[in-house]
Amino acid sequence: MSAYLNALGVICALGRGKDEVARNLFAGDCSGMRSEAGWVPERSLPVGAVAGELAQIPAELARHGTRNNQLLLEAALQIRQDIDQAIQTYGRERIGVVLGTSTSGIDEASRGLAHYLREQQFPAEYDYQQQELSAPANFLADWLQLGGPTYVISTACTSSARALASARRLLDLGVCDAVLCGGVDSLCKLTLNGFSSLEAVSDDRCNPFSLNRNGINIGEAAALFLMSRQAGEHQSIALLGSGASSDAHHISAPEPTGRGARQAMSTALERAGLQAQQISYLNLHGTATRHNDAMESEAVAALFPAGVPCSSTKPMTGHTLGAAGALEAAFCWLSLSAGNHDRSLPPHIWDGQPDPELPVLNWVTPTDCLASTGPRYLMSNSFAFGGNNISLIIGDAP
Image (cartoon, rainbow, N blue to C red; front, top):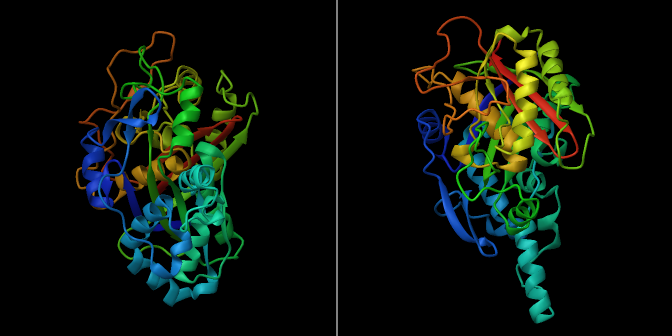
């Protein structure tokens, strides 16, 4: 049974909406990564912030008023017509919401607590529920008055990739007829300072898989799919397979041989009924940290001995943490979209200086493109603290 990805709403440092994001993605546009002070004491860091005003949370849902939910609302508004059609077709009780996040409303909560320490009372707009990890899914379900299963998965940087896999299971089990699934994370001081304390944040734009790589950049994003068992009217793109593993090697460092990452990719291929050589493109987790890139290189080289076109898109968006899995799955979706007339792929942005200690990978250049015929299958990797790994395969539906 196929799980069709019939609509996509997306917002990140590359822009708002499918057209703008795709145009900048395929052009390798890194202009959305801007250096900002104020996040981490005595440091100015590149961040992938969404510029401009965001959609306002409706007054009757003011308790949901967080930047995280505003990003999610922006993505949902882009596909509101598709959502309304699904509601009309299936009914509100048969539509679920499964999202991934790691920040939720923690930025508003942090400011609320700081206000309490100063004033001995919380600000009027503070609501404890804003910081609960379930908050984005609860907001979306309340806004749309949906009655299906509603929950959030929070497994750090694999959160929203796992949300897509979980959404498919709801369809396969017959629990839902459609699921709104994806992820959202907003910039906040907690995560930036946390990664900074781990000495994992670069002062420059991240440089994945380079000899000179020295850490991540952090960004914010929302990516929201409408997944159903019915093919889209104009094009059929589906989640064909997923594979997850948990090697539990270390609380923050990846297992150095890439054993768990390779297991996740292999399982995704098996569930999709595909061989490694059938994958047309691989979106790497590619955080530009020393250990992650080394591990992922080993895993990819072992599973794809003949090579596979691949790239890390994080120099264009930053690492969007809980939203990264869905956002990078969205980049695969955009590559397959009928609107991608040139069949472009996301290019690999780096300084071109390979690390001689890493296996050689097949980097996507601005001139590379997908085949014009035949079924096309794209893979996306996401890895997280604790040895938590997941790979998704998105492709032309059979």
